[in-house]
Length: 223
Image 1: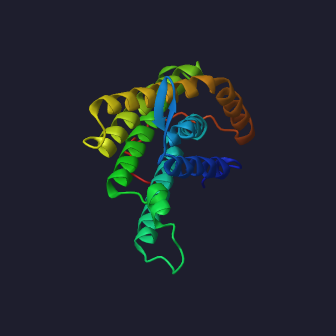
Image 2: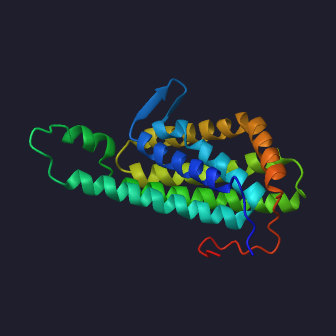
Image 3: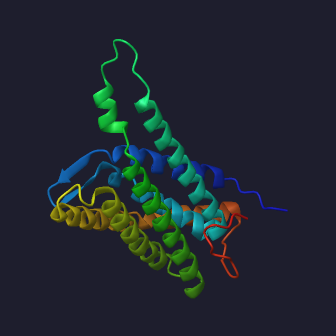
């Protein structure tokens, strides 16, 4: 009999929502003097924080379910945007260029986003689960930050290179990768006190503090 959790569904919804919103916001490149990155970067780091919370409290297997839920939700959203963009506009509707500029996702962007997200999130969850065993559940900050350092690095490199290599100058690609990586990692560090509180709250309310001892970490297994 599977254990029932009160807050797992809510956290999963927030996780997927952050992912979808950040994907749409990524259509704009913003400049904050020292940092240049896509708009989705402002929100996307929260998906890693939710991923940390899911793995820390509920374990890798539950996190794996939610990561795939996010993957197929993002895929469906992207396909709908592309299909709707290709449909003929109604007479008098003159906003096709605006739609294409914001929501007219190219297959290359979709592929880059999905690959980067999947590899980054699974790396983050795997490392956190393993570090929890190594640290015997102590020093939560070491695994939330440590897993993010690896996960965000993989995510940033894969997305920028797959999406924009050959489109933007190499100098801008390097700037985007570095800016994305530093900003996302800093967000994780700044949110660490809040992560501690949420994790502590959930462990008490859910009566769960899962250790992935003996877990099959194959990302393609759904059990």
